Amino acid sequence: MTDPIEESILQYIQEQFPPVTGAGAISAESPLLESGLIDSLAIFRIIQFLEEAFSLEIAPEDVVGEHFESVRAIARLVRSRGASGPVQD
Image (cartoon, rainbow, N blue to C red; front, top):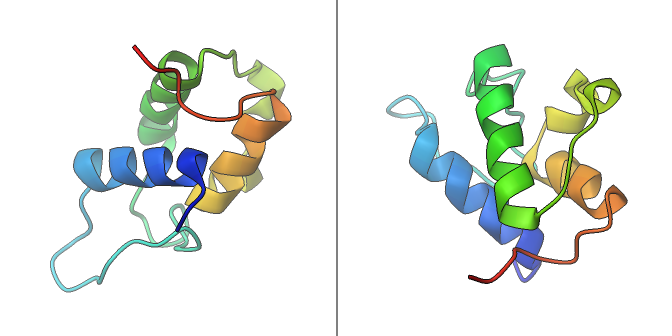
């Protein structure tokens, strides 16, 4: 994967929400909600990460399942808010 947005999101999710043993590796297309890897509380933690890491704001109307169904979907949401990559400290 060479997309810096997807890489950053994937790394965060792998660190914060490790899959159940035997579930396999998480990829950009892994079904996060459907698999139960993340839930509604996790979505709010991810939003906080996105807003800090990419210096953007996620509007309440953007907090819908389709935007959080996979790392790739989350990255599309981030790009739709104008981010081109993680903010460097």
